[in-house]
Image (cartoon, rainbow, N blue to C red):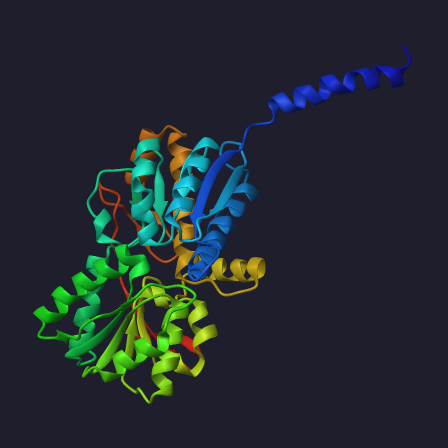
Length: 370
């Protein structure tokens, strides 16, 4: 038989052999709000996770298997979030990164417990998840820790004794948990809080009315428990009414969208960060350079934490394989794990503590206060 026909007849066997020897990818899920008012957090987190996966794949993946990141948008909707978790579970993911909002974490928790799906929340702070021996692990500190430290700073460093508080109830698992912990600490230090001004984020928020209510209160400053866009909108309304009192916020407010939407209205706003934006850590500086090159923008805290969470998850899989119980124990026993800025070590129940850094908006930029 001519050599040509031998090769033609052999091709199906060669292709079948190649397909049989090619290893299945290791599937990792990512879940966040990628559309809507909270998309800044979700997109930043997705980019951080994607960068981590791409770096590990360039090094050969896990035991010769490529990592495949399956991304799902929950749109900050409870129904969509639960459906996405089920879909990802059926797709065979070994671990889930996300979500990025505390409210969504409390929504999906029963489902991930039912599926025994190891999940790492990069930016989940609600104290409703503190101390639980479950399948939800976190690399972000509890609202309780952050609220107590922030209350101490506002009283002792900023000299404030009476505050207005602006609360987005859409993410109540975070905002209400933070408010309750902050109120306990602030009043214990002799402070007083005005009646909270609450709302539900959406397309028809009456920011002008909310600003008028805040403006009438006899407070010395304002605490914002809201996302970047809504914080910028209410501050625009307040500044247009001559409101000159200092404004403070949590890290949730402090994404790059704050500067884009806020302009001069957010000048001098002070918030805390769980990352040092001026860090000289070689690992962090290399990450910033790679992030800029890959996505054409600056990374924020959500990008950093999602990157760290993804690398931790992959190292856990590297040590344990996909068995959920073994993976969970590998992650709990992983520390100290070298994050971009801090050495990460989870508690036996999958919680973590981090130092806080204080940031002020100055001349349209974020500056770390020393």
